[in-house]
Length: 177
Image (cartoon, rainbow, N blue to C red):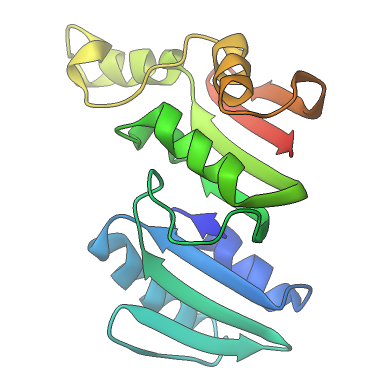
C-alpha cells in the first residue's frame, strides 16, 4: 500500500510486476483524481470507475482508494509493505495513523516513509515571509529522534527502525514489524 498517490511509487511498484496487488491510497479525492490521470498516462492499462481504479501490469492489480490512515479498512496483519511518501507531516492524528500502519502490517512487513523536518518549514517561512512555521497546519518534527520515537511508540521494535536525514530537511523512515 502506498499513500500520497500522486503515485510515483505507486506506479513504480505496480509496473515492477513484483507484487500481486498495489494499493495507492490518499484521503484527498483531488489527489486520487490526479493519480488516476498519471496512471493512465503511464500506460499501465488502467481503467477506472467510481472511487477505485483497477488494472494490471504483468501480474499486478492496481487499486486506488480513498482512506484515512487512522482507520485503514484492512485486516490486521494483512499488508506486506506500506509506503507513505511525503505524507506523515499532514496526518491529523499521527499516533493513530502509525498504530494503524503497525496493525495492518504482517509480521516481517515493512513500512517506508518520507517526511519533512521542521527545518523544511522554516526554509519555506523565509521565502513566504511568514512569522512562524507553527502557523501552518502540519506536524513538526525537530529531528530524526522524534520520528524514531513516534514509530517505536506505535509498536515497532527499536532495533528494526532507522531514520535517515537527507540534506537538511528530508527524513526517510524504514521499519520492520
